[in-house]
Length: 146
Image (tube, rainbow, N blue to C red; front, side):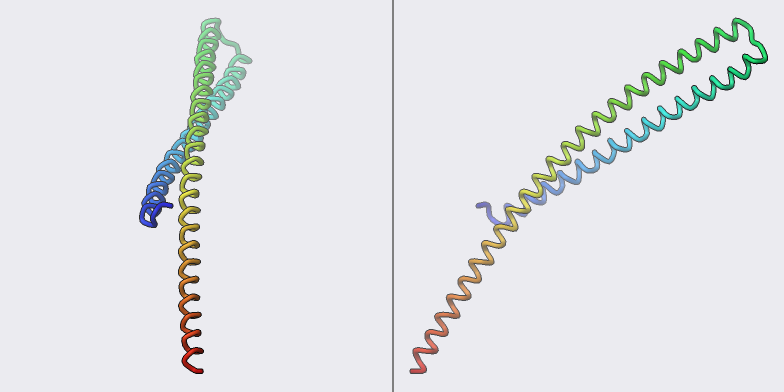
């Protein structure tokens, strides 16, 4: 079994790794949220622009204005499609970071469990030694009282 100082070193390294992966996971989750907000903003803008255009169309528009509207809507649709891909990529990255965090957390917990077992074994051994010493002391006391 590894010595106490070796386990402490492993636990410390695992804790640092877990902290680093947790920070990366937090950044990845924030990136997903930011990307989703941007996608929502683009979708809302597209819907608002379409409503305003419908109101303008009711008053009558030129064919050139209609073509401009269609071209702009195509650009917005492309931007929305691209942003959806950015969101998917950010989600895949956050899933990978979550898996990395879980792996590092499992490793840290394993080392901690080993350390706890080592401490329990050392405590049992110490208790046995104490009990043996007390038994020997009691036996000597009983021997000398005769």
